[in-house]
Length: 321
Picture 1 (cartoon, rainbow, N blue to C red):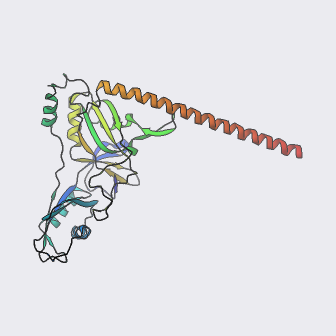
Picture 2: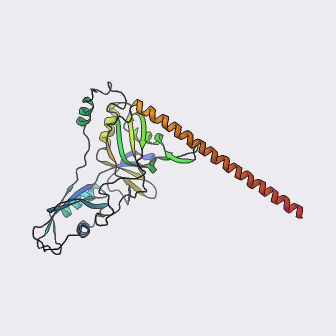
Picture 3: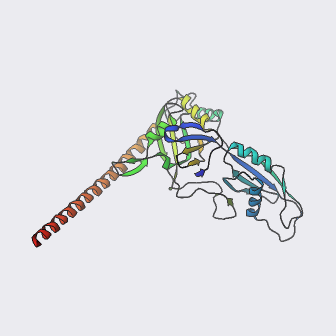
């Protein structure tokens, strides 16, 4: 998740009441082809090359730029721009250009192009479920047919509500359901969070591997399972989220989350698995409610003790007079 100044692309409404919109993916790959002849003992700084690419992309700014992969012949960088307009402009600015690096006699050739983002097709999920004996949506059981969209890297903080019963903020499945009901009738919602961290590709502690903001580990992301009541809703969601990022707009800022979307193959939302998780959730909630009740009683006891202490001090002052 990262902040942006202003989205140049017109965002598509997802849930305007919560400030949630969809904007296109704007990633590109940049191949830097290395010359064959170089001075012996001279090495290449990835940071220097990224700085040259950044300057070559002016006046546009990369949201992030990092090494994607490298060989002896070429180094490929992966970057992201703020909008499709900026993406197209940077490709025009960089593609086919050359750059000079000290220690190399030949010029470095640059090739820039839009990065292909994998997204499953309708044929893929139909073939997958037919291979498991599910020929149609009506024949399959919930969670074991094409009905569940899996959204990864969704910001947890966008879907929090205060739960007074346990006195803490928690993810609201009602909020999530209201967001994705845009595509069709939602049957069920579930979320999963792994180790409280946000994963992102090319994660590295090396300052020479990335240029620009990298998602903080404190920004907690989660997986959202959205199960639809009918096949039309599932297909609408898959097509509507294809090649998109989620954006949240507030009066102060705009944040963008680089979500991954696919269809669920694990049966996570099957009736049996849902019932099992609900039973576990009920036990956990009961424990939290008991802890919350204990905290309330402790606060009440302390308040009563403080009130009694105040009365005693007041009585002592009255006696002295």
